[in-house]
Length: 135
Image 1: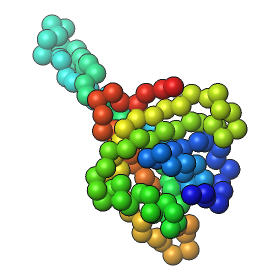
Image 2 (image 1 turned 180 degrees about the vertical axis):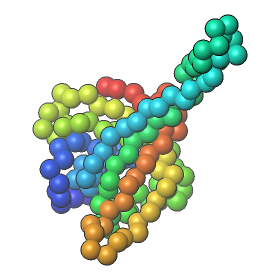
Image 3 (image 1 turned 135 degrees about the vertical axis):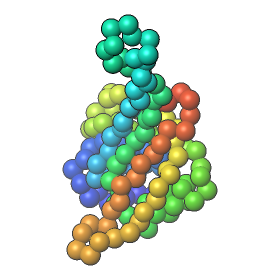
Image 4 (image 1 turned 60 degrees about the vertical axis):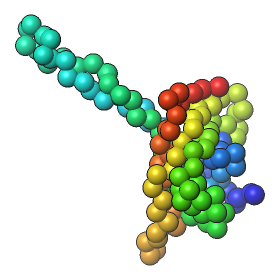
């Protein structure tokens, strides 16, 4: 399946083995550690925290087309765990680092606003204890 290029984004983006590079307007990942309060062990009374659980995922604005909906809706509907791969500027430089992980698409919202581009934010939550890996 091929897509019409709609933006100047040069990132290589793959969802469940399908190249969706041209379907995304923006793309990136987050990795956020929660804070665990360990102040109870502090003799000085100063607040102390350590890193707790880590939440990771990929987020991007995707144009809703018949092709993108045909890929994303079944993944969300069936609660499928699938591979997401992101290579910043990978379409113009294949030597760039690739970030990838097993993810789930937990929210799917193909709604539209009159007069606005038909796109939505896709958030792919990491669903594997290995988290986001690089290659």
